[in-house]
Image (cartoon, rainbow, N blue to C red; front, side):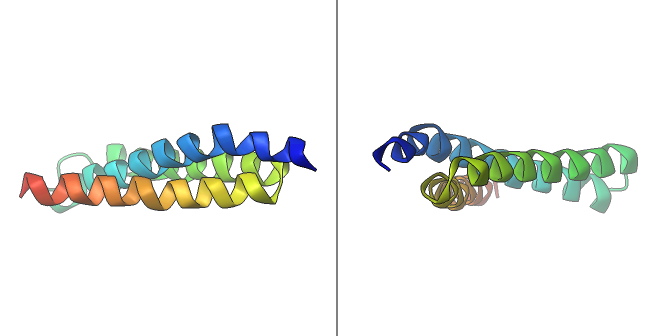
Length: 90
């Protein structure tokens, strides 16, 4: 049982990075759609961010509940980092 907790060491940072990338790509894609500059790029970024998030969460789920919880918490931390950076840009 204790061996499954080692997965937290990769799942937490992977979740933080995935969360930051997910919300950063969301901002870039939304700005592209609002300014009507690159609709294809925005759609590609949307597909990429969903695929990346799903892949990390599925890998964490396959590793077990502690890894999935760590990845989910990391995703929330990554979101907070991305939102703080977005507020500073305004």
